[in-house]
Image (cartoon, rainbow, N blue to C red; front, side):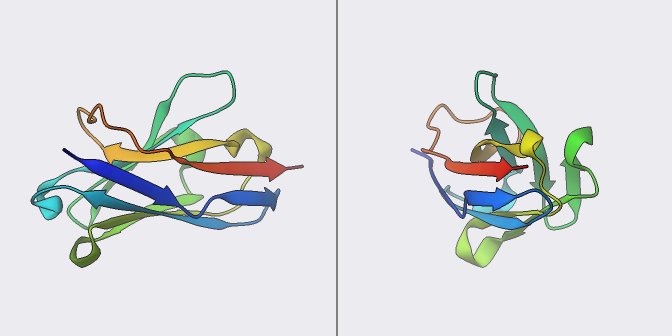
Length: 115
C-alpha cells in the first residue's frame, strides 16, 4: 500500500518561503505523476501542482510563478518550493499521486502564513 510522509511546514510571515518534502513508498516511483494538494481551513482539498518525469509540471493559477514542484527519484521524494507566501496559502499540504490519488493519504504538513 502506498504511503506518503510530508514534512517541512511551519509558521512564516507573508513574503517568506518554505520547502516541503514528501517521501512516497510507491513501486516504480519514477513512473508516477506526483502531486501536491492543500486543504485550507474549512475548505475542500485541492490539487496545487503536479510533476511527471522531471520536466512536465502543472500548477493551479493561484501559485503559478511562486511555487515550484520537483522530484528526486533516487530518494522517492517530491518537493514543493513555496516563495512569496501569503495568508491565502495557509493550509495543510499533502502529497499523493497527481492523477487518481490513492486513498491512503498521509498526515500532511501544516503551513501557516501570518500577515
